[in-house]
Image (cartoon, rainbow, N blue to C red; front, side, top):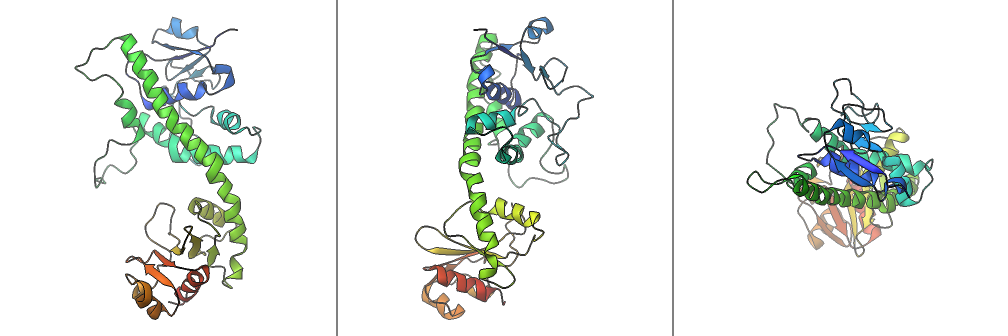
Length: 318
Protein backbone atom coordinates (compact mmCIF):
# COMPACT_ATOMS: atom_id res chain seq x y z
CA UNK A 1 0.00 0.00 0.00
CA UNK A 2 1.29 3.43 -0.95
CA UNK A 3 1.68 5.69 2.10
CA UNK A 4 0.53 9.24 1.43
CA UNK A 5 2.42 12.25 2.72
CA UNK A 6 1.23 15.49 4.27
CA UNK A 7 3.55 18.45 3.97
CA UNK A 8 3.66 21.48 6.21
CA UNK A 9 6.28 24.06 7.16
CA UNK A 10 9.23 23.45 9.44
CA UNK A 11 10.22 25.69 12.34
CA UNK A 12 7.79 27.22 14.81
CA UNK A 13 4.34 25.66 14.60
CA UNK A 14 0.92 27.13 15.28
CA UNK A 15 -2.59 25.93 16.02
CA UNK A 16 -3.76 25.93 12.40
CA UNK A 17 -1.03 23.71 10.94
CA UNK A 18 -1.14 21.38 13.95
CA UNK A 19 -4.90 20.98 13.58
CA UNK A 20 -4.82 20.75 9.78
CA UNK A 21 -2.48 17.76 9.92
CA UNK A 22 -4.51 16.06 12.65
CA UNK A 23 -7.78 16.57 10.78
CA UNK A 24 -6.37 15.19 7.54
CA UNK A 25 -5.20 12.04 9.31
CA UNK A 26 -8.78 11.45 10.48
CA UNK A 27 -9.75 10.76 6.88
CA UNK A 28 -9.33 7.16 5.62
CA UNK A 29 -7.11 8.21 2.71
CA UNK A 30 -4.64 9.97 5.04
CA UNK A 31 -5.03 7.76 8.12
CA UNK A 32 -1.47 6.44 8.21
CA UNK A 33 0.12 9.23 6.23
CA UNK A 34 3.68 10.42 6.70
CA UNK A 35 4.27 14.00 7.86
CA UNK A 36 7.00 16.08 6.26
CA UNK A 37 7.93 19.43 7.79
CA UNK A 38 10.03 21.54 5.43
CA UNK A 39 10.25 24.85 3.61
CA UNK A 40 12.10 23.38 0.65
CA UNK A 41 9.75 23.63 -2.38
CA UNK A 42 11.27 20.57 -4.03
CA UNK A 43 10.70 18.42 -0.93
CA UNK A 44 7.18 19.75 -0.40
CA UNK A 45 6.26 19.11 -4.01
CA UNK A 46 6.68 15.37 -3.42
CA UNK A 47 3.84 15.43 -0.86
CA UNK A 48 0.27 14.44 -1.69
CA UNK A 49 -1.13 17.49 0.11
CA UNK A 50 0.54 20.62 1.50
CA UNK A 51 -0.87 22.84 4.27
CA UNK A 52 0.18 26.27 5.56
CA UNK A 53 3.14 26.57 3.19
CA UNK A 54 4.00 26.63 -0.55
CA UNK A 55 2.56 30.04 -1.46
CA UNK A 56 -0.28 28.33 -3.33
CA UNK A 57 -3.94 27.55 -2.79
CA UNK A 58 -6.10 25.44 -5.07
CA UNK A 59 -8.34 23.62 -2.56
CA UNK A 60 -7.03 20.26 -3.84
CA UNK A 61 -3.33 19.83 -3.07
CA UNK A 62 -2.22 23.26 -1.92
CA UNK A 63 -3.69 24.86 1.19
CA UNK A 64 -1.58 27.91 1.98
CA UNK A 65 -3.30 31.13 3.06
CA UNK A 66 -0.40 33.59 3.26
CA UNK A 67 -0.65 34.89 -0.30
CA UNK A 68 -1.71 38.48 -0.84
CA UNK A 69 -4.48 37.37 -3.19
CA UNK A 70 -5.95 34.84 -0.75
CA UNK A 71 -9.18 36.16 0.78
CA UNK A 72 -11.25 32.99 1.16
CA UNK A 73 -13.73 32.87 4.05
CA UNK A 74 -15.82 30.01 5.41
CA UNK A 75 -18.96 31.44 3.80
CA UNK A 76 -20.52 34.78 2.96
CA UNK A 77 -21.80 34.90 6.55
CA UNK A 78 -18.27 35.08 7.98
CA UNK A 79 -15.64 37.78 7.54
CA UNK A 80 -12.61 35.98 9.00
CA UNK A 81 -10.09 34.83 6.41
CA UNK A 82 -9.39 31.10 6.45
CA UNK A 83 -6.16 29.61 7.73
CA UNK A 84 -4.93 26.11 6.87
CA UNK A 85 -7.25 24.11 9.16
CA UNK A 86 -10.85 23.08 8.69
CA UNK A 87 -10.97 22.61 4.92
CA UNK A 88 -12.06 18.97 5.11
CA UNK A 89 -14.56 19.48 7.93
CA UNK A 90 -17.61 18.10 6.13
CA UNK A 91 -15.84 14.87 5.17
CA UNK A 92 -14.51 14.42 8.70
CA UNK A 93 -17.94 14.98 10.26
CA UNK A 94 -19.49 12.50 7.83
CA UNK A 95 -16.84 9.87 8.54
CA UNK A 96 -16.66 10.35 12.31
CA UNK A 97 -20.44 10.27 12.85
CA UNK A 98 -21.19 7.72 10.12
CA UNK A 99 -23.49 10.13 8.27
CA UNK A 100 -23.95 10.45 4.53
CA UNK A 101 -22.15 13.52 3.23
CA UNK A 102 -25.48 15.01 2.11
CA UNK A 103 -27.19 14.40 5.48
CA UNK A 104 -28.58 17.77 6.68
CA UNK A 105 -26.84 17.39 10.04
CA UNK A 106 -23.43 17.51 8.33
CA UNK A 107 -23.79 21.11 7.20
CA UNK A 108 -25.39 22.19 10.49
CA UNK A 109 -22.50 20.69 12.44
CA UNK A 110 -19.90 22.10 10.06
CA UNK A 111 -21.17 25.62 10.64
CA UNK A 112 -21.45 25.06 14.39
CA UNK A 113 -17.90 23.73 14.68
CA UNK A 114 -16.56 26.59 12.63
CA UNK A 115 -18.22 29.37 14.59
CA UNK A 116 -17.58 27.79 18.00
CA UNK A 117 -14.02 26.50 17.50
CA UNK A 118 -12.32 26.87 14.13
CA UNK A 119 -12.97 30.55 13.43
CA UNK A 120 -10.94 31.59 16.48
CA UNK A 121 -7.98 29.60 15.13
CA UNK A 122 -8.34 31.27 11.72
CA UNK A 123 -8.53 34.70 13.33
CA UNK A 124 -5.51 34.13 15.56
CA UNK A 125 -3.34 32.92 12.71
CA UNK A 126 -4.37 35.85 10.52
CA UNK A 127 -3.73 38.41 13.27
CA UNK A 128 -7.37 39.35 13.82
CA UNK A 129 -8.39 40.48 17.31
CA UNK A 130 -11.63 39.34 18.91
CA UNK A 131 -12.47 42.92 19.92
CA UNK A 132 -11.80 46.44 18.55
CA UNK A 133 -8.33 47.91 19.13
CA UNK A 134 -9.73 50.78 21.21
CA UNK A 135 -11.35 48.39 23.69
CA UNK A 136 -9.17 47.37 26.63
CA UNK A 137 -9.80 43.78 27.81
CA UNK A 138 -10.91 43.45 31.43
CA UNK A 139 -8.38 40.67 32.09
CA UNK A 140 -5.50 38.85 30.46
CA UNK A 141 -5.59 35.19 29.46
CA UNK A 142 -3.24 32.73 27.82
CA UNK A 143 -5.77 29.92 28.02
CA UNK A 144 -7.26 30.14 24.54
CA UNK A 145 -6.33 27.17 22.41
CA UNK A 146 -3.92 28.91 20.00
CA UNK A 147 -1.81 30.14 22.92
CA UNK A 148 -1.78 26.71 24.51
CA UNK A 149 -0.59 25.15 21.26
CA UNK A 150 2.12 27.80 20.87
CA UNK A 151 3.42 26.85 24.32
CA UNK A 152 4.42 23.43 22.96
CA UNK A 153 7.23 25.10 21.00
CA UNK A 154 10.65 24.93 22.68
CA UNK A 155 11.54 27.82 24.96
CA UNK A 156 14.19 30.22 23.76
CA UNK A 157 16.73 28.72 26.19
CA UNK A 158 15.99 25.05 25.48
CA UNK A 159 17.78 22.78 22.98
CA UNK A 160 16.24 22.96 19.53
CA UNK A 161 16.69 21.08 16.28
CA UNK A 162 14.41 19.62 13.59
CA UNK A 163 13.87 16.38 15.49
CA UNK A 164 12.92 18.16 18.72
CA UNK A 165 10.55 20.44 16.84
CA UNK A 166 8.98 17.52 14.99
CA UNK A 167 8.23 15.62 18.20
CA UNK A 168 6.81 18.70 19.87
CA UNK A 169 4.72 19.35 16.75
CA UNK A 170 3.23 15.86 17.05
CA UNK A 171 2.36 16.45 20.71
CA UNK A 172 0.77 19.82 19.91
CA UNK A 173 -1.15 18.29 17.01
CA UNK A 174 -2.48 15.53 19.26
CA UNK A 175 -3.42 18.11 21.90
CA UNK A 176 -5.48 20.38 19.65
CA UNK A 177 -6.83 17.42 17.68
CA UNK A 178 -8.20 15.82 20.83
CA UNK A 179 -9.98 19.07 21.69
CA UNK A 180 -11.42 19.20 18.18
CA UNK A 181 -12.73 15.63 18.41
CA UNK A 182 -14.26 16.34 21.82
CA UNK A 183 -16.07 19.30 20.26
CA UNK A 184 -17.18 17.26 17.25
CA UNK A 185 -18.44 14.37 19.38
CA UNK A 186 -20.34 16.70 21.71
CA UNK A 187 -22.02 18.65 18.94
CA UNK A 188 -22.64 15.54 16.84
CA UNK A 189 -23.88 13.19 19.57
CA UNK A 190 -25.48 15.52 22.13
CA UNK A 191 -26.01 19.08 20.88
CA UNK A 192 -27.62 18.21 17.55
CA UNK A 193 -29.89 15.63 19.20
CA UNK A 194 -31.25 18.36 21.46
CA UNK A 195 -32.46 20.40 18.47
CA UNK A 196 -35.44 18.11 17.84
CA UNK A 197 -36.45 18.27 21.50
CA UNK A 198 -36.19 22.07 21.50
CA UNK A 199 -38.24 22.26 18.31
CA UNK A 200 -40.95 19.99 19.78
CA UNK A 201 -41.16 22.23 22.86
CA UNK A 202 -41.22 25.33 20.66
CA UNK A 203 -44.26 24.00 18.79
CA UNK A 204 -46.12 23.47 22.09
CA UNK A 205 -45.46 26.95 23.48
CA UNK A 206 -49.05 28.16 23.01
CA UNK A 207 -50.26 25.48 25.43
CA UNK A 208 -48.86 27.55 28.29
CA UNK A 209 -49.35 31.14 27.16
CA UNK A 210 -51.68 32.48 24.46
CA UNK A 211 -48.82 34.56 23.06
CA UNK A 212 -46.33 31.69 23.13
CA UNK A 213 -43.89 33.35 25.51
CA UNK A 214 -43.08 30.25 27.61
CA UNK A 215 -41.33 27.08 26.45
CA UNK A 216 -41.29 23.97 28.64
CA UNK A 217 -38.64 21.24 28.42
CA UNK A 218 -39.24 17.92 30.15
CA UNK A 219 -35.51 17.55 30.85
CA UNK A 220 -32.37 19.62 30.99
CA UNK A 221 -30.69 20.06 27.60
CA UNK A 222 -28.55 22.62 25.72
CA UNK A 223 -31.37 24.83 24.48
CA UNK A 224 -30.09 28.35 23.92
CA UNK A 225 -28.44 28.17 20.51
CA UNK A 226 -31.20 25.94 19.15
CA UNK A 227 -33.93 28.23 20.42
CA UNK A 228 -32.33 31.30 18.87
CA UNK A 229 -31.94 29.49 15.56
CA UNK A 230 -35.51 28.18 15.56
CA UNK A 231 -36.86 31.62 16.46
CA UNK A 232 -34.96 33.06 13.52
CA UNK A 233 -36.28 30.40 11.16
CA UNK A 234 -39.88 31.07 12.18
CA UNK A 235 -39.60 34.87 12.42
CA UNK A 236 -40.34 34.87 16.15
CA UNK A 237 -37.05 36.29 17.45
CA UNK A 238 -37.42 37.89 20.87
CA UNK A 239 -40.89 36.52 21.57
CA UNK A 240 -40.03 33.73 24.01
CA UNK A 241 -39.29 35.16 27.44
CA UNK A 242 -38.99 32.16 29.77
CA UNK A 243 -38.00 28.51 29.54
CA UNK A 244 -38.79 25.85 32.11
CA UNK A 245 -36.81 22.66 32.66
CA UNK A 246 -35.88 20.17 35.38
CA UNK A 247 -32.43 19.70 36.86
CA UNK A 248 -33.34 16.10 37.66
CA UNK A 249 -34.87 16.86 41.03
CA UNK A 250 -36.41 20.33 41.05
CA UNK A 251 -37.59 22.67 38.29
CA UNK A 252 -36.18 25.91 36.96
CA UNK A 253 -37.69 28.93 35.29
CA UNK A 254 -35.03 30.82 33.35
CA UNK A 255 -35.26 34.12 31.51
CA UNK A 256 -34.13 33.95 27.88
CA UNK A 257 -31.11 36.22 27.19
CA UNK A 258 -31.28 38.96 24.57
CA UNK A 259 -28.40 37.29 22.70
CA UNK A 260 -26.71 33.91 22.86
CA UNK A 261 -23.65 35.07 24.84
CA UNK A 262 -25.39 37.83 26.79
CA UNK A 263 -26.05 38.00 30.52
CA UNK A 264 -28.89 40.46 29.90
CA UNK A 265 -32.33 38.86 29.79
CA UNK A 266 -35.32 39.71 27.63
CA UNK A 267 -37.45 39.89 30.78
CA UNK A 268 -36.00 39.15 34.21
CA UNK A 269 -38.11 37.67 36.95
CA UNK A 270 -39.82 40.41 39.02
CA UNK A 271 -37.58 42.58 41.15
CA UNK A 272 -39.70 41.98 44.26
CA UNK A 273 -38.91 38.26 44.04
CA UNK A 274 -35.17 38.57 43.62
CA UNK A 275 -32.98 37.21 46.39
CA UNK A 276 -35.91 35.60 48.21
CA UNK A 277 -36.15 31.92 49.11
CA UNK A 278 -38.56 29.20 50.18
CA UNK A 279 -41.67 30.27 52.12
CA UNK A 280 -40.85 33.97 51.96
CA UNK A 281 -40.68 33.75 48.17
CA UNK A 282 -43.85 31.65 47.96
CA UNK A 283 -45.74 34.27 49.97
CA UNK A 284 -44.38 37.09 47.81
CA UNK A 285 -45.30 35.56 44.46
CA UNK A 286 -48.30 33.51 45.67
CA UNK A 287 -46.95 30.24 44.27
CA UNK A 288 -46.43 27.11 46.37
CA UNK A 289 -43.13 25.22 46.68
CA UNK A 290 -40.82 28.03 45.58
CA UNK A 291 -37.11 27.48 46.22
CA UNK A 292 -35.32 30.67 45.13
CA UNK A 293 -35.00 33.52 42.68
CA UNK A 294 -31.48 34.67 41.83
CA UNK A 295 -30.60 38.20 42.93
CA UNK A 296 -30.25 39.25 39.28
CA UNK A 297 -33.62 37.76 38.34
CA UNK A 298 -32.37 35.61 35.47
CA UNK A 299 -33.40 32.29 37.05
CA UNK A 300 -35.62 30.85 39.76
CA UNK A 301 -36.48 27.43 41.17
CA UNK A 302 -39.53 25.49 42.29
CA UNK A 303 -40.02 21.98 43.61
CA UNK A 304 -42.60 21.15 40.92
CA UNK A 305 -43.13 21.69 37.22
CA UNK A 306 -46.51 23.26 37.92
CA UNK A 307 -44.96 25.67 40.39
CA UNK A 308 -42.23 26.75 37.97
CA UNK A 309 -44.84 27.26 35.27
CA UNK A 310 -46.95 29.42 37.58
CA UNK A 311 -43.91 31.53 38.43
CA UNK A 312 -43.31 32.14 34.73
CA UNK A 313 -46.97 32.94 34.03
CA UNK A 314 -47.15 35.42 36.90
CA UNK A 315 -43.84 37.02 35.89
CA UNK A 316 -45.27 37.81 32.45
CA UNK A 317 -47.64 40.33 34.04
CA UNK A 318 -44.92 42.42 35.68
